[in-house]
Amino acid sequence: MNKPPNLFLQLEEDINLASLNPNTQNLLLRNLNTLKTTQLNIMIVGATGAGKSSTINALFNMDIATVGTSSSPETSNITAYTLHNLVLWDSAGLGDGYTNDKQHAKAIKQKLKERTKDGELLIDLVLVIIDGSTRDLGTPVTLINNVILPSIGDNPNERILVAINQADIAQKGRDAWDYDNNHPTPASAAFLDDKIVSLKQRLFESSKLTISPIYYVAGFHDGEHQQLPYNLSKLLLLIVEHTPKNKRVILANRTLSTKQSAWQYDDEHCDYNQKTRHHLWEGIMDSIHHGADIGSDIGFVFGRTGELIGALIGGTLGAISGGLRSLFRL
Image (cartoon, rainbow, N blue to C red; front, side, top):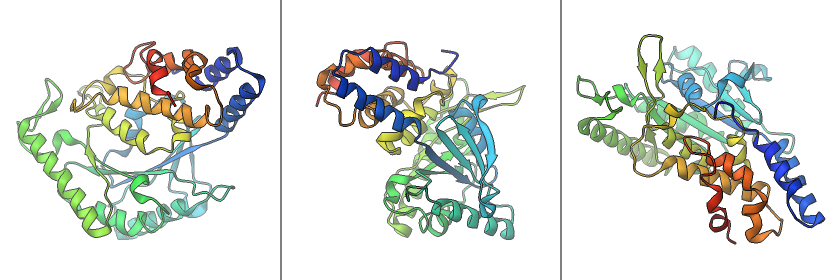
Protein backbone atom coordinates (compact mmCIF):
# COMPACT_ATOMS: atom_id res chain seq x y z
CA MET A 1 0.00 0.00 0.00
CA ASN A 2 1.69 3.17 -1.21
CA LYS A 3 -0.92 5.58 0.08
CA PRO A 4 -2.12 5.25 3.69
CA PRO A 5 -5.88 4.65 3.89
CA ASN A 6 -8.30 7.20 5.29
CA LEU A 7 -9.85 5.07 8.01
CA PHE A 8 -12.30 7.78 9.05
CA LEU A 9 -13.85 7.81 5.58
CA GLN A 10 -13.93 4.02 5.48
CA LEU A 11 -15.52 3.82 8.92
CA GLU A 12 -18.21 6.27 7.83
CA GLU A 13 -18.87 4.28 4.67
CA ASP A 14 -19.08 1.01 6.62
CA ILE A 15 -21.55 2.52 9.08
CA ASN A 16 -23.75 4.04 6.37
CA LEU A 17 -23.89 0.79 4.40
CA ALA A 18 -24.56 -1.45 7.38
CA SER A 19 -27.98 -2.94 8.05
CA LEU A 20 -28.51 -1.35 11.44
CA ASN A 21 -31.45 0.28 13.16
CA PRO A 22 -31.41 4.09 12.78
CA ASN A 23 -30.65 4.76 16.46
CA THR A 24 -27.59 2.50 16.45
CA GLN A 25 -26.40 3.91 13.15
CA ASN A 26 -26.73 7.49 14.40
CA LEU A 27 -24.84 6.63 17.60
CA LEU A 28 -21.95 5.12 15.62
CA LEU A 29 -21.80 8.20 13.40
CA ARG A 30 -21.80 10.51 16.45
CA ASN A 31 -18.96 8.51 17.97
CA LEU A 32 -17.05 8.81 14.70
CA ASN A 33 -17.62 12.56 14.52
CA THR A 34 -16.28 12.89 18.07
CA LEU A 35 -13.16 10.98 17.05
CA LYS A 36 -12.67 13.25 14.03
CA THR A 37 -12.23 16.22 16.38
CA THR A 38 -10.07 14.35 18.90
CA GLN A 39 -6.29 14.72 18.98
CA LEU A 40 -3.58 12.38 20.21
CA ASN A 41 -0.58 14.32 21.55
CA ILE A 42 2.78 12.61 22.05
CA MET A 43 5.89 14.41 23.34
CA ILE A 44 9.36 13.14 22.41
CA VAL A 45 12.27 14.11 24.66
CA GLY A 46 15.91 13.14 24.87
CA ALA A 47 19.48 14.29 24.60
CA THR A 48 20.95 15.82 21.47
CA GLY A 49 22.07 12.97 19.22
CA ALA A 50 19.73 10.38 20.72
CA GLY A 51 17.86 10.10 17.43
CA LYS A 52 14.54 11.77 18.13
CA SER A 53 14.13 13.04 14.57
CA SER A 54 15.20 9.76 12.97
CA THR A 55 12.73 7.89 15.19
CA ILE A 56 9.89 10.19 14.19
CA ASN A 57 10.81 9.84 10.52
CA ALA A 58 11.03 6.05 10.76
CA LEU A 59 7.73 5.55 12.58
CA PHE A 60 5.51 8.02 10.84
CA ASN A 61 4.50 9.22 7.39
CA MET A 62 6.27 12.56 7.67
CA ASP A 63 5.54 13.48 4.05
CA ILE A 64 2.11 14.68 5.21
CA ALA A 65 3.24 16.49 8.36
CA THR A 66 2.65 20.18 8.88
CA VAL A 67 5.30 21.80 11.03
CA GLY A 68 4.93 24.54 13.60
CA THR A 69 6.12 25.63 16.99
CA SER A 70 4.25 25.68 20.24
CA SER A 71 1.78 28.55 20.53
CA SER A 72 3.06 29.39 23.99
CA PRO A 73 6.10 31.74 24.09
CA GLU A 74 7.48 29.75 27.03
CA THR A 75 7.59 26.59 24.90
CA SER A 76 8.46 28.06 21.50
CA ASN A 77 11.53 25.82 21.19
CA ILE A 78 9.28 22.75 20.93
CA THR A 79 8.43 21.76 17.36
CA ALA A 80 4.95 20.40 16.61
CA TYR A 81 4.47 17.91 13.76
CA THR A 82 0.78 17.52 12.91
CA LEU A 83 -0.29 14.42 11.00
CA HIS A 84 -4.07 14.67 10.74
CA ASN A 85 -5.27 14.07 14.34
CA LEU A 86 -1.84 13.11 15.67
CA VAL A 87 0.47 15.81 17.05
CA LEU A 88 4.10 14.98 17.83
CA TRP A 89 5.81 17.49 20.12
CA ASP A 90 9.56 17.31 19.51
CA SER A 91 11.42 19.06 22.32
CA ALA A 92 14.86 20.58 21.86
CA GLY A 93 17.71 18.20 22.60
CA LEU A 94 19.26 18.27 26.03
CA GLY A 95 22.99 18.27 26.71
CA ASP A 96 23.99 21.53 25.01
CA GLY A 97 25.02 23.33 28.17
CA TYR A 98 23.57 24.24 31.54
CA THR A 99 21.76 27.40 30.43
CA ASN A 100 20.14 25.80 27.39
CA ASP A 101 19.20 22.66 29.30
CA LYS A 102 17.54 24.73 32.00
CA GLN A 103 15.51 26.57 29.38
CA HIS A 104 14.57 23.35 27.57
CA ALA A 105 13.56 21.66 30.83
CA LYS A 106 11.32 24.61 31.67
CA ALA A 107 9.70 24.38 28.24
CA ILE A 108 9.04 20.65 28.68
CA LYS A 109 7.45 21.26 32.08
CA GLN A 110 5.25 24.03 30.68
CA LYS A 111 4.03 21.89 27.80
CA LEU A 112 3.32 18.93 30.08
CA LYS A 113 1.19 21.14 32.32
CA GLU A 114 -0.79 22.56 29.40
CA ARG A 115 -4.47 21.63 29.33
CA THR A 116 -7.14 21.39 26.66
CA LYS A 117 -10.29 23.49 26.66
CA ASP A 118 -11.98 20.57 28.45
CA GLY A 119 -9.49 20.78 31.30
CA GLU A 120 -7.62 17.59 30.39
CA LEU A 121 -3.83 17.47 30.17
CA LEU A 122 -2.82 18.07 26.56
CA ILE A 123 0.02 15.53 26.36
CA ASP A 124 -1.15 11.92 26.34
CA LEU A 125 2.25 10.20 26.28
CA VAL A 126 5.91 11.12 26.73
CA LEU A 127 8.49 9.07 24.85
CA VAL A 128 11.96 9.39 26.37
CA ILE A 129 14.65 8.41 23.86
CA ILE A 130 18.08 7.47 25.16
CA ASP A 131 21.26 7.35 23.11
CA GLY A 132 22.35 3.71 23.14
CA SER A 133 25.97 4.61 22.47
CA THR A 134 26.38 6.36 25.82
CA ARG A 135 26.83 4.69 29.18
CA ASP A 136 25.29 7.67 30.95
CA LEU A 137 21.95 6.58 32.39
CA GLY A 138 21.99 9.21 35.11
CA THR A 139 20.99 12.06 32.79
CA PRO A 140 17.78 10.45 31.43
CA VAL A 141 16.84 9.24 34.92
CA THR A 142 17.25 12.80 36.21
CA LEU A 143 15.20 14.12 33.29
CA ILE A 144 12.38 11.73 34.13
CA ASN A 145 12.50 12.34 37.89
CA ASN A 146 13.03 16.11 37.95
CA VAL A 147 11.31 17.32 34.80
CA ILE A 148 8.70 14.85 33.57
CA LEU A 149 7.29 13.21 36.70
CA PRO A 150 6.41 16.46 38.54
CA SER A 151 4.45 17.69 35.52
CA ILE A 152 2.84 14.66 33.88
CA GLY A 153 -0.13 14.20 36.19
CA ASP A 154 -1.68 10.89 37.22
CA ASN A 155 -0.75 7.38 36.07
CA PRO A 156 2.88 8.07 35.07
CA ASN A 157 3.50 4.34 34.50
CA GLU A 158 0.98 4.46 31.68
CA ARG A 159 2.13 7.77 30.23
CA ILE A 160 5.94 7.60 30.26
CA LEU A 161 7.70 5.38 27.70
CA VAL A 162 11.45 4.84 27.62
CA ALA A 163 13.37 3.47 24.65
CA ILE A 164 17.09 3.11 23.92
CA ASN A 165 17.90 4.00 20.31
CA GLN A 166 21.02 3.19 18.30
CA ALA A 167 21.26 -0.31 19.73
CA ASP A 168 23.54 -1.22 16.83
CA ILE A 169 26.36 0.88 18.32
CA ALA A 170 25.58 0.43 22.00
CA GLN A 171 28.37 -2.07 22.46
CA LYS A 172 31.68 -1.06 20.99
CA GLY A 173 33.67 -3.44 18.85
CA ARG A 174 33.62 -5.10 15.47
CA ASP A 175 31.28 -7.93 16.47
CA ALA A 176 28.63 -5.83 18.22
CA TRP A 177 26.03 -6.11 15.45
CA ASP A 178 25.20 -8.66 12.76
CA TYR A 179 24.70 -6.26 9.86
CA ASP A 180 24.03 -9.02 7.32
CA ASN A 181 20.93 -10.16 9.23
CA ASN A 182 20.27 -6.84 11.00
CA HIS A 183 20.13 -8.00 14.58
CA PRO A 184 22.43 -7.89 17.62
CA THR A 185 25.06 -10.54 18.13
CA PRO A 186 24.51 -12.74 21.21
CA ALA A 187 27.08 -10.71 23.15
CA SER A 188 25.46 -7.42 22.14
CA ALA A 189 21.96 -8.71 22.97
CA ALA A 190 23.17 -9.68 26.45
CA PHE A 191 24.77 -6.25 26.87
CA LEU A 192 21.58 -4.48 25.83
CA ASP A 193 19.40 -6.68 28.05
CA ASP A 194 21.64 -5.82 31.01
CA LYS A 195 21.32 -2.13 30.17
CA ILE A 196 17.53 -2.43 30.12
CA VAL A 197 17.54 -4.18 33.51
CA SER A 198 19.84 -1.55 34.99
CA LEU A 199 17.72 1.32 33.68
CA LYS A 200 14.50 -0.27 34.88
CA GLN A 201 15.97 -0.80 38.32
CA ARG A 202 17.29 2.76 38.58
CA LEU A 203 13.92 4.20 37.64
CA PHE A 204 12.14 2.08 40.22
CA GLU A 205 14.62 2.86 42.98
CA SER A 206 14.57 6.60 42.32
CA SER A 207 10.90 7.16 41.55
CA LYS A 208 8.98 3.88 42.02
CA LEU A 209 8.21 3.82 38.30
CA THR A 210 7.56 0.30 37.04
CA ILE A 211 7.97 0.95 33.32
CA SER A 212 9.69 -1.48 30.96
CA PRO A 213 12.19 0.16 28.55
CA ILE A 214 13.04 -1.40 25.20
CA TYR A 215 15.93 -1.00 22.74
CA TYR A 216 15.69 -0.40 19.01
CA VAL A 217 17.37 1.09 15.95
CA ALA A 218 15.59 3.90 14.12
CA GLY A 219 17.82 3.40 11.09
CA PHE A 220 19.18 5.89 8.60
CA HIS A 221 20.08 6.41 4.95
CA ASP A 222 22.71 9.00 4.16
CA GLY A 223 22.76 8.45 0.39
CA GLU A 224 25.69 6.05 0.59
CA HIS A 225 25.14 3.87 3.65
CA GLN A 226 21.92 2.48 5.05
CA GLN A 227 21.03 0.97 8.40
CA LEU A 228 17.58 -0.60 8.41
CA PRO A 229 15.37 -0.21 11.49
CA TYR A 230 15.32 -2.87 14.17
CA ASN A 231 12.62 -3.38 16.82
CA LEU A 232 10.70 -0.42 15.43
CA SER A 233 7.63 -2.68 15.46
CA LYS A 234 8.25 -3.29 19.17
CA LEU A 235 8.48 0.45 19.80
CA LEU A 236 5.22 1.06 17.93
CA LEU A 237 3.48 -1.64 19.95
CA LEU A 238 4.73 0.02 23.15
CA ILE A 239 3.23 3.32 21.98
CA VAL A 240 -0.08 1.77 20.92
CA GLU A 241 -0.47 -0.22 24.14
CA HIS A 242 -0.12 2.95 26.21
CA THR A 243 -2.29 5.13 24.00
CA PRO A 244 -5.80 5.61 25.43
CA LYS A 245 -8.09 3.12 23.69
CA ASN A 246 -10.41 5.83 22.43
CA LYS A 247 -7.46 7.45 20.59
CA ARG A 248 -5.70 4.42 19.11
CA VAL A 249 -7.45 4.65 15.76
CA ILE A 250 -5.80 8.05 15.33
CA LEU A 251 -2.41 6.32 15.08
CA ALA A 252 -3.72 4.13 12.28
CA ASN A 253 -5.30 6.87 10.21
CA ARG A 254 -2.70 7.77 7.54
CA THR A 255 0.06 8.45 10.07
CA LEU A 256 2.28 5.34 10.09
CA SER A 257 5.14 4.67 7.71
CA THR A 258 4.19 2.51 4.75
CA LYS A 259 7.77 1.32 4.23
CA GLN A 260 7.79 -2.45 4.69
CA SER A 261 11.44 -2.36 5.78
CA ALA A 262 10.47 -0.30 8.83
CA TRP A 263 8.56 -3.23 10.33
CA GLN A 264 10.63 -6.12 9.02
CA TYR A 265 13.33 -6.75 11.65
CA ASP A 266 12.78 -7.32 15.37
CA ASP A 267 13.75 -9.67 18.18
CA GLU A 268 10.88 -12.03 17.27
CA HIS A 269 9.79 -12.48 20.87
CA CYS A 270 6.27 -12.19 19.49
CA ASP A 271 4.47 -10.95 16.37
CA TYR A 272 4.56 -7.26 17.29
CA ASN A 273 2.86 -6.11 14.10
CA GLN A 274 -0.09 -8.46 14.56
CA LYS A 275 -0.49 -7.45 18.22
CA THR A 276 -0.44 -3.81 17.18
CA ARG A 277 -3.18 -4.36 14.61
CA HIS A 278 -5.35 -6.06 17.23
CA HIS A 279 -4.80 -3.20 19.68
CA LEU A 280 -5.87 -0.78 16.95
CA TRP A 281 -9.06 -2.81 16.60
CA GLU A 282 -9.61 -2.49 20.33
CA GLY A 283 -9.47 1.23 19.67
CA ILE A 284 -12.37 0.95 17.25
CA MET A 285 -14.33 -0.95 19.89
CA ASP A 286 -13.73 1.82 22.42
CA SER A 287 -14.15 4.88 20.21
CA ILE A 288 -16.64 3.97 17.48
CA HIS A 289 -18.52 0.98 18.82
CA HIS A 290 -18.76 2.41 22.36
CA GLY A 291 -22.35 2.34 23.63
CA ALA A 292 -23.75 0.71 20.48
CA ASP A 293 -25.45 -2.68 20.71
CA ILE A 294 -24.37 -4.47 17.54
CA GLY A 295 -22.96 -7.58 19.21
CA SER A 296 -21.16 -10.12 17.02
CA ASP A 297 -22.20 -8.27 13.85
CA ILE A 298 -19.29 -5.87 14.29
CA GLY A 299 -17.24 -7.95 11.85
CA PHE A 300 -19.80 -7.31 9.14
CA VAL A 301 -20.28 -3.63 9.97
CA PHE A 302 -16.57 -2.78 9.88
CA GLY A 303 -15.39 -5.43 7.43
CA ARG A 304 -13.66 -3.13 4.96
CA THR A 305 -12.09 -1.07 7.73
CA GLY A 306 -10.77 -4.33 9.16
CA GLU A 307 -9.11 -5.16 5.87
CA LEU A 308 -7.38 -1.79 5.79
CA ILE A 309 -6.05 -2.14 9.33
CA GLY A 310 -4.99 -5.69 8.50
CA ALA A 311 -2.78 -4.26 5.77
CA LEU A 312 -0.98 -1.83 8.07
CA ILE A 313 2.61 -2.25 9.32
CA GLY A 314 3.65 -5.18 7.22
CA GLY A 315 0.28 -6.91 7.03
CA THR A 316 -1.69 -8.08 4.01
CA LEU A 317 -5.11 -6.95 2.85
CA GLY A 318 -7.81 -8.80 4.76
CA ALA A 319 -5.42 -10.16 7.37
CA ILE A 320 -7.51 -9.15 10.36
CA SER A 321 -11.13 -8.98 9.22
CA GLY A 322 -11.62 -12.74 9.47
CA GLY A 323 -10.87 -12.62 13.19
CA LEU A 324 -13.25 -9.80 14.06
CA ARG A 325 -15.96 -12.01 15.54
CA SER A 326 -13.71 -13.59 18.15
CA LEU A 327 -11.84 -10.36 18.83
CA PHE A 328 -14.99 -8.41 19.65
CA ARG A 329 -17.08 -11.10 21.27
CA LEU A 330 -18.65 -9.46 24.31
